[in-house]
Amino acid sequence: MTRHIISVNDLTAKQILKLFTLVDSDITFPLPFSNPILATLFFEPSTRTRLSFESAMLKYGGKVISASDLATTSIEKGESLKDTIRIVSDSYANIIAIRHKVKGAVAEVAQYSSVPIINAGDGTGEHPTQCFGDLYVLWKRFGTLKDVRVLLCGDLEYSRAAHSLKLGLKHMGAIPIEYQYYYPLGGPIPEYNYIDAIYITRQQSERHTSPYPIVDYNHHMQAIVNQPFAKDALIMSPLPRAGEISEQLDQDPRAVYFEQAKAGVPIRKALLAYLLGAITL
Ligand code: CP
Image (cartoon, rainbow, N blue to C red; front, side, top):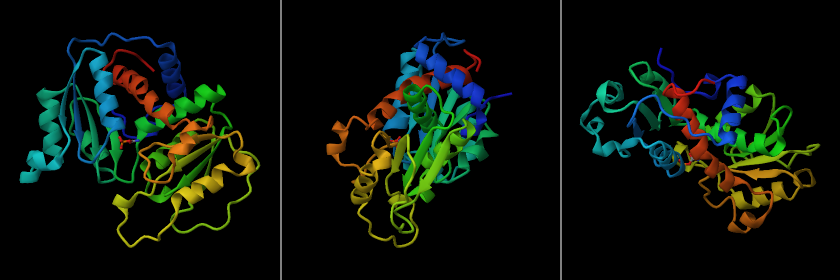
């Protein structure tokens, strides 16, 4: 049966820990056949996810074919995403990473694919490969994920990275705590005992369908990271940032968001190896 990664829950906690151990050992896995081809079909903007997937495949000596704009595909002429996947999986590529603006769209078309499909973000749904990188950074820092307390902040309702991280943290025995200070407007900052990491998400303006309250995101973020409970907390973000994290914070030793982006390549490299059958998890 063809394996897909649509949700964080497509890997067990044990498999996720094995993935991290393999990434940590920095081993290069020989892929089971030469010149594998990755298709990146990104029907929403991306920098980190698409380019790190492509970099990961190129590091294996594989090749990449890409469509990054719906308007340049035959979907613009009325072709369905289902048919697009049938065509690409039948003979063009050995594995496909898809980003789509509709929640559930990637899961729906995966059933028509003869090669592994990776959900690279589906609307407000999930972003599992971002989550594996986020969990990896936490695991590296704390040596475990068990009982690690992560405060998820920001536009949580619309953030797929936050949705996947919440699922992933629960999956690994960690403790997600949610504080949605952007929408609807939150009250005073609750007093937490201690927090191991703060995960900041930007306002997901592109997903808002109704007028949105004006909020000073940077003010909220500063207020959170200056709380006594956050004194030693990692400051995380899936990025991109859109005003909520000032560049001054980059010098703060707690800030690990560039580390998260960097983890994207080895994590996706190991996931490609797993889905192509080079390693077991
Ligand atoms: N974190 C993330 O998904 O970034 P991109 O949208 O740039 O891929």
